[in-house]
Image (cartoon, rainbow, N blue to C red; front, side, top):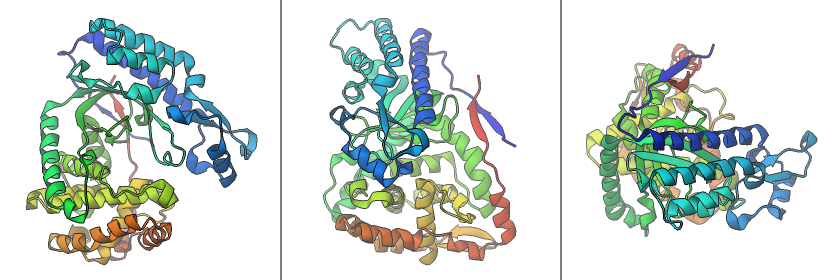
Length: 439
């Protein structure tokens, strides 16, 4: 039976209510677009070889504009595809959003027709999301963070387009914003003092970080419901990291800790935050698992790399920071420990399964009194051994090497052999509750 957990929305009394309601109205129409996409869409990983070839050869996609589109399956999943673009299928919705954006500009007393926000509204009306991204202006209201538009998700690099859609409104959380900037400053020092030894690292890794509490969410997070704590829309220019603290707290409290504490693993929201910041910034490193080179292994291995470098970063900080980040990583990964079959795992869980097996092999992870423990004194040797090897695999550009690495460690966690069946069965029976916002 589905369990529903309702989480509180952040306070809004200090905000201009007219401006706030206009932004929420924009986000709600964006959510309608997302719902249409989910109902009609055939995801890239569901395509067969002939369909993928047809898509790559298609002249119907305006790739120069990075126009997001929907795969619409023909009857019985034939080998040809009927492709419809957002700017065609959602023409009326995009016009409504553009009107709302212009009304919002009036509320904010923006009279210049060349103001970035006005130009953004015009591009949205035409479904030109790439150009609209260039005029993303969060400084319209320092208290509000809103996201509206298309961005890349897994499998998009192959087609050179933006595939996912996001729509949400957050209220800035100044306290957590300060903490995020502090962690980012430490990561910058890590890049300069440590990562530079492995090769040149440009400034893209230090992506802008926006931190807030979700007031309304649509898009990939679901309308008023969320299963995630962070996103990285692929805007034009450096990607931006968005951390959502109230939903992070709910996911941690109701989804992560109920399982991890059974294995003796716990963490705080602060630990979770530090791990996430390190993970997301690590996606910006020059060593990336690109899909055109690593194909179906790209996504899981890129998430694994981000986990590994987040722990690498933490290993250069004080002991409390290292233990907090490792505890947060393991707390998120304990769901994988009891699995019987990995075939249905998402990419993040695949990444954690790989790391769990690697750390078990290196005796970084051990079982004591039926609980999983991290041997922190072994972390440095683990990092010293594996970071250069992962960089070598990436720089080899060899799918065969990536495949061999993936297949070696992407298996049912070996640490299960040291845990009681009673404990494993108990975690397998846990049902993750659905999270909703209070009306």
